[in-house]
Length: 404
Image 1: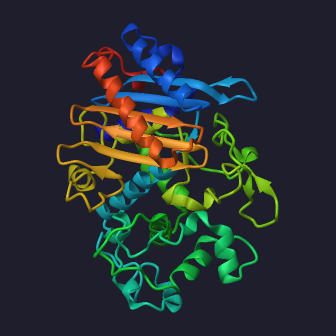
Image 2: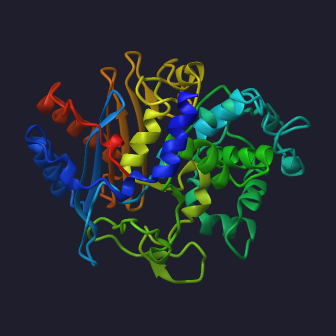
Image 3: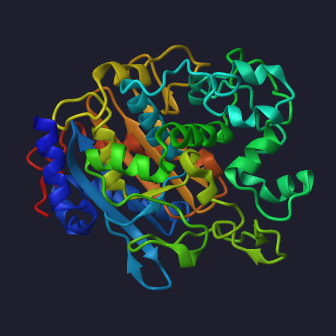
């Protein structure tokens, strides 16, 4: 009953993005944090970034740094939207766990074969190991796919050339192409990070629910969390959403071929890859503050109702061993520290949840030459920031309660 009332209230009041501003986090005790993250941004030549900090599901700090769009002279605010890259996988995994709770599938549900969800593709299979893949294998990157020869989700032109395609493949065409090749290992016996695996999870959601992936996740996962301004990304600057930042390559980066194969040259962050086609593996756009709200709804802590049962939250954050990926999260530690990162051209995002109830989220709109390794640098700055504030986060503040 309480959960339903909270969802109804959030639906009426709308997105946090429209009302939370930088001035709301101007606290004396947080000035050293401001200085630290401003210095981090400048050290890595980042145009703009957004930081959100929670303490036991209270949003105690939210700040934008630098430029949301330098050409338009727009400063970054907490409500600006950013591409979330592989942070999207946590959202997709939550949708899968919700469907399991509803009895629509189980983690043992086969993906292919006579009883598989996606058995309409069985005629393309040449390796019987595909019939061993289940939903959990996809969630844990154990399905047998590999990126040793390149990530197919970011190699559209090579895929088109290899399979004789005249246009970028849709998800069904890409699936038929890729599953015609043998797996690199028997499902469940090894692990290799796979964006394609999470595309298949997106397709499974669509097949079972009869709804688009975006619609299902928005209405059944995000909106019940109080997140109303998430979208599936566009590929070009002209496709940006209201409030979305501009993305920037690292200084000195060269142009790349457009993924359509029309011969044009583009910035890598605007047209070199089919970002929208990543779907549940990396296509979501959202703000740091609404992302914080989502995390607060799947973390098992008191204060904000979770949209999943405690059993599902515990399964998603269970530490098994260093070689086994958790469900949706990138990594968990035995002492209860959770991490989810995302990175591609123009975007770096990281979520760190700590055993003491704090959660730190940073999203940038600029690539660096560190690539995905920037997440390690960001995690190091989180350590410094936590040392600066100790337990002195603004104790009486909760920006989630900002009137809307």
